[in-house]
Image 1 (cartoon, rainbow, N blue to C red):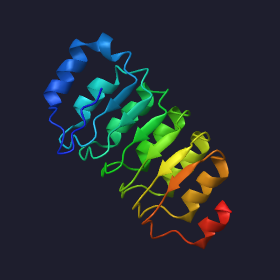
Image 2 (image 1 turned 90 degrees about the vertical axis):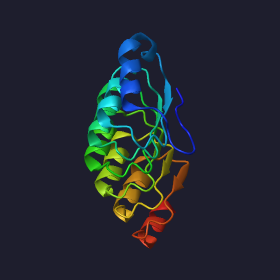
Image 3 (image 1 turned 180 degrees about the horizontal axis):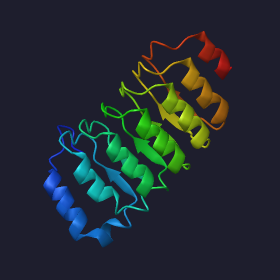
Length: 180
């Protein structure tokens, strides 16, 4: 399912809830959802959709500014096969949600966290320990992340192929040495 629009998503909360409730069977086989830039999407509508997507592998919520930890904790408890998650620009997400995802979605391969200002190294440490198969991490402009979290990723996610941490002003040479 792809509801992404460059100029903002036009999907209403009530429409999404209705579709999820009426077509619970059709949602059960959904493997990919892109709801990027649905800036008005709220937790209750998101939850109604995600609880029916047990086979979900890829979820892009980039720019869904009103989604909170509750939405992503719902993802972690209903979508254990998740491999690709982008929560970039989801400004309300905190470590609590990422820790839950790390604990319940161990097959995570790619993760987008860019501009998630409330995240700290606790999130990266949880991902490092819970998702050691992580291949790609994008954490651009995440001011709460430091060497500590990125070193944990580099130590535990040995297959990491792509890391984008530009504009993370708290990174120092310690992290660069850990990568070497």
